[in-house]
Amino acid sequence: MIYLPQGNTCVFGLQWGDEGKGKIVDLLTEHADVVVRYCGGANAGHSVGINGQKYSTHLLPVGIFRPHAMNLVANGVVLDPEALFREIDEFVGKGFSVSPRNLRISYKAHVVMPWHKLEDGARESSAQGASIGTTRRGIGPAYADKMQRSTAVRVADLLQEPSLQERIARIVAERNKVFKALYDLPPMDWKAVFETYRDFGRRIAPFVDDTSQLLVEAWKAGRRIVFEGAHAALLDVDHGTYPYVTSSSCSALGLYTGAGCPPQLVQNFVGIIKAYSTRVGGGPFPTEQDNDTGNYIRQRGDEYGTTTRRPRRCGWFDAVAVRYSIELCGVTAVALTLLDVLSGLDRLKVCTAYRHRGSRVERFRADANFLAEVEPVYETLAGWPGNISGCRQFEHLPHEAQEYVRALESFIGAPIRIVSVGPAREATIYR
Image (cartoon, rainbow, N blue to C red; front, side, top):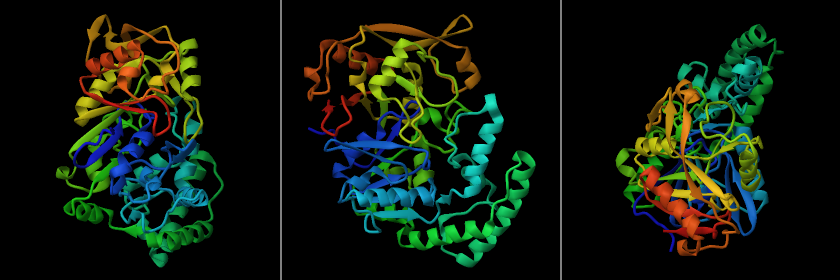
């Protein structure tokens, strides 16, 4: 029987992203009325396996695969209209319905503009060894302009053509001077930018709504809501391994401002972990295995970015980091993914503490300098042979796999209710 928590549920990653949130959100949306994406942008990638086919979303909530669900792109998302419409056209071409009947976009969401992408790429290239490994999709600069305010564009602005023209002309004139001075980039044509985004505004208009109000109305009507986080707690701009983070509040703590809803609306917080650890781009990674073990995990788990196809750095499970995320986010249940990837390894290691300057440390510190100095303290567990992707009950797993799950549960201090043993919907064990 499917694990179905009562009330409304927030789903989010507990590591450095890529934990398999797409599949878990998809499972929980079977009985959901509303699915809400509340952070990040087109730099996210959520994959779902349906009837032997793999589908990946970047801006659309995963609920788009459930015909009965209303999908909301909330105000905490930075929206790239070009990526959005490319994604809509792709899924409509594959037979899925995407229209204002099942998709609404917050008028408060900020827009990723061409100058954001230019700045992102130029800054990363010029930083050389000091780059932080962004996806170069303009996400950070868009969030920066959100705080700058006078240089920001919101979805609501796309619907006001005269003022949009003035705004774009003014911002492009300013950015051309900055980009020439800092990066020697050729000037942008403000008229071409305006015409493109004017057309985006005309197309997006039927989808634009007050998603906060829609959420409150759904709540009052007793409808079931699932909130879909992007990225993960250790990439949160405030609480992650700064500065090697993303630019949004992507832990469960970002839910309330990112979706525009009151705290009383959410009862369940389902954190997602994979059975090992990965991260993309720069930043400290205490349990990284830059060796045959890491390569084995990467190949078995297809650990390449959904959005970028960049190879992910792979390593052993870090229980210290996950405990931090669980306590930070108030996790009520955990979903464990990619357990099948570890099949075939004789021994498995789990980091249960760190050693820092000669002392044992059992608490995580979201400080890149601190983490660069720690050494993991491991416990070793037995591995298991064979293919477990056909298991549908916990008792059908090899004894060693069961013990591994129980050990992780003990190390992280939270109940593991879902165990995923493959990418397909049905490759799931409920506890």
